[in-house]
Image 1 (cartoon, rainbow, N blue to C red):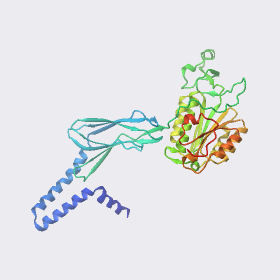
Image 2 (cartoon, one colour):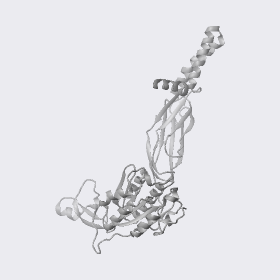
Image 3 (cartoon, helix red, strand yellow):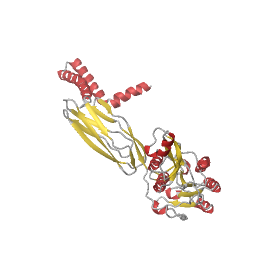
Image 4 (cartoon, one colour):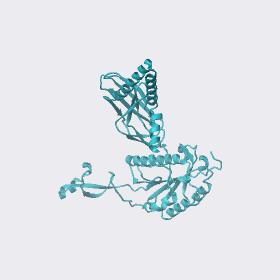
Length: 418
């Protein structure tokens, strides 16, 4: 049955023009033989010659063809333009007509198709620009060139290059201020922890390992011992900031850019940017299709890693925020500030936050008001519970400006949705 369906598809859909031409050939041949009709005999001969010529045309049109594509970047931020240049070269002395050059991609709004003709030894080049309107990971290529004959009986396709991937980071808002409770650090002591970064705080030396920078070599120890030694550094006494983004599918509302998922991702990116620019150590966790986890570190590279996690984050998880906090709670101590970002109205995660507070962890929360995203739920009770637990809380509605909302601090949510 499957074979019959495949044959039907080839004959009546994929090769419809060829089927019509062959049918005309058979009809012309039968009439010519039955009635000795010379005109039908000539028509049958013309069709008999045309079919192989059309096939050869299709194949030759793809021979001696070279197509290259230049994609300078493979990582961009939401809202930026992705540009590429496609170059097609005819290496033969035969003209190539009606070539359809297509650069397939699942990037929304991407358009890389063009119909071209190339003369002998001719080269054509063009530039395509697409706007990265949505975060995520998208495939682009390989470039596909399709050729066909004048009658549409045959079609040939040839791929050039290979598929590449484009990672689109979420857009981050530049926050002038975002305050969270400071962690309790010892009065005159230091919160010491080894760091692979070069900081003003050197704590010791260790043996040289391949890949260590020469500027970390401790020359006095090297001269004294005869073995190359490098300096060990520690981070400054500042608390870690951990961002916990709720990607539980059951608590999300809205669609597309106007969804709690996209707003939560953008808020996480903005807060991470704010603290990393302030040279704070930032970690990230969320549970969507899998566990997204980045240990708390500093610097631009850490911001890039968090953006990569956020670009791939999808609110399809089955792990509630309370379970995530409970499972990862050993990571948090008295020198940690945890910031949760969630639209959940389930009070179980508030209980988890209170347990963390009992261990000396400093807490803050960003509540996405689900009623403004089309849900019947309201965060008023959750806000009250967080306030009663003395947890710093920000409330963000769908139409809010993040600069103003995240700078408002303890502001009670209004009863009417925005």
